[in-house]
Structures are given as structure tokens and as C-alpha cells.
Image (cartoon, rainbow, N blue to C red; front, side, top):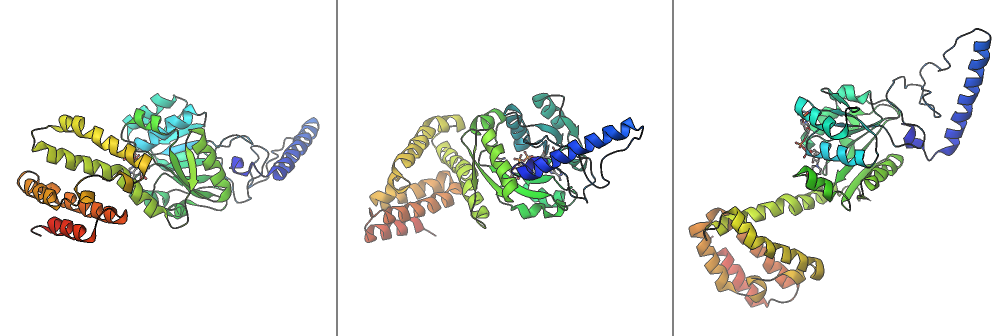
Length: 354
Ligand SMILES: NC(=O)c1ccc[n+]([C@@H]2O[C@H](COP(=O)([O-])OP(=O)(O)OC[C@H]3O[C@@H](n4cnc5c(N)ncnc54)[C@H](OP(=O)(O)O)[C@@H]3O)[C@@H](O)[C@H]2O)c1
């Protein structure tokens, strides 16, 4: 991918001079009535940088300094939203691959009929310089094993937990692999698009690829970060707690509130403002500073009443209640607001009939 090399101005200038020289030679030969393809076998000359001699594949090329021609494999939640965001940012998304005809159509409806749509991921690779794999985590490595990149191309996945090494099977000489993980919950297309500006994007890969991925993140208004090596699984586990973990908690709130006769809409109407207030408190006061409830007060009797009520009305929620209150006790101890004997009483109440 020539765009990867945009920092290498010397190489670019040399290649430009070579091309000018080639053009002059061609003109001379043509004047002599001789036709000759100036492309040396095994090299590319689509622009001003030469590809390695083992690269003899006609994939798409951007012009020097331009953003890489990009294709997305997987037109699911992330693939579609990222495609639209990049397209709106003027990032050239040229192709999509999805096994599903309706998803291919939806992608082209959103980005325009100029986007080439493929049922086969392997066909897309021929059309682009940067391949984005937006497929389930478990599919990344097996799918990468079916692809073969050529020199100058790069491939990234959008997984929050996998390293770029999961893409190694797709790499040929001179190609690169990376990661581009937006810290956004892609539950709804328009909401995801609205959330991308300002969102964190974890990027990884070789330095020159990372520079382009940072550009790509910034183009959609996001904030690129590089994670400390080996920390990606922990980073993603925290993300899962921030998204699916909160959803699970909301579901527990819904279940317990049902015992009071509230349906889901009623429970959300009543309890979401409290959730939002707690989040605002955490933002202003920090995690420990935002803790309220029976744990920091040492109200062991309240916990006993709660557990008895849950036994009757929401038994499935009891384990989550216990686990979270045990954590609240630890937080309260940590901020020094709980005497040791009070903490002991709370733990005894939480253990209950266990
Ligand atoms: N959802 C989120 O909030 C979120 C946030 C950040 C990052 N991510 C990451 O983004 C990636 C994609 O997640 P998603 O939520 O977009 O998933 P998704 O909505 O389920 O979409 C996955 C896409 O991958 C394609 N696919 C599935 N199996 C395939 C296979 N065997 N071969 C080829 N294509 C296959 C699907 O199929 P078709 O070919 O049938 O279209 C679909 O288009 C994951 O790595 C995920 O961890 C997700």
C-alpha cells in the first residue's frame, strides 16, 4: 500500500523520478515505432512507489498521500456503521463482503452503488489496499487463514480482545496486520454513529500502519489509543463490564422491580434516573465517592430484609445482589467509612443461608 509509505518522501521522490524517466523512454520508443510495457515483470508501477519484486498482483492503489482504498468484510453491526462513518469522513470505502445479499444491499444503499459488493471475502481482497475484518472474534483467525494479502496491503480486525497476530495467516511478504477496536456499543446504527465522535479506538500494528489507523480513527472523530502490550484482554473485559455488564445489571433491576408490579418500561422510567445520577456522581466524585446504600451505612438488617424479599420474588437475582453488595462492602472499607465490626456484620448478613 503506497499510502503506508507516505512518510518516506525520499522513496516517493525517487519513484516519481523513475516514472518520469520511464515515461520519457516510452515516448522515445514510441517515436521509434516500438511499443513496450515499462512495467518490470514482478513489480507494480501504479504510481510513484515501487512494490517489492514478489508482488505481482493488481489490487487497488491509492495515490501518494491519499487515504488507502478500504474494504470491509462483514456487514453486521460494526461493519455497516464503520463503513458509513468512514464514507461520511471522506475515507474511501470501495468494497464490502457479506455472505448475505440483504446485508450487501443495505451497505450499498447506505454508501452508494459505487461500492463493490462481494459474497466471497477472498474476492474483496483483490479490490482494496486496507482490509477491515468486522466479523465475530471467533471467526477472525479461521477467516484470515482463507485470505492471502499481497505486498503493500494491510488487514485489520475490529475485535477488542484479539491481537493483530490473529491475522498472521493472511499475511504475505510486505503486508501488515493490525487492530482497530472502537469502544462503542453498536446496538443501534444511528446511536452508534452518534457515539463514534469522541469515542476511544484501540489501535495496534506496525508503526506505519498504526499511523494510518490513527488517521482513520481521527477522521471519524474518535480518539486513537495504543494499549500496553499484553493488556488487550483486560481492556476488553472492562469494556464488556461497561456495556454488557451494565445491561445485565439493568436486567436484574428489571427482574426485582417486577415484584412491585412494574413492567420493564416502568422499571426503566423509575430506576434509570437513579442509575444516571449514580454515573454522574461517579464522574464527579470518583467510584468510591459515589457509593451510597446499606454497605457504607453498615445496615446489615436492611440486607437481611432484601435477601428475604429476593428469596420470595426474584430468586434468580439473588446471586448478583450478593456479589455486588459484597463488592460494596469492600469499597466502603477501602474509603474508610466502615468499621471492621460493621463490615463483619454486613458479611454475615450477606452470607445468610448460604
Ligand atoms: N457490537 C459491538 O458493540 C462491537 C463493538 C466493538 C467491536 N466489536 C467487534 O467487531 C466485530 C464484529 O462484531 P459485530 O457486532 O459487528 O458482529 P455482527 O453484527 O454479528 O456481524 C458480524 C459479521 O460477520 C460476518 N460473519 C460471521 N461469520 C462469518 C464467517 N464465518 N465468514 C465470513 N463472515 C462472517 C457476518 O456475516 P454475513 O457474511 O452473513 O454478513 C456479519 O456480517 C467483533 O470482532 C466484535 O468483537 C463489536
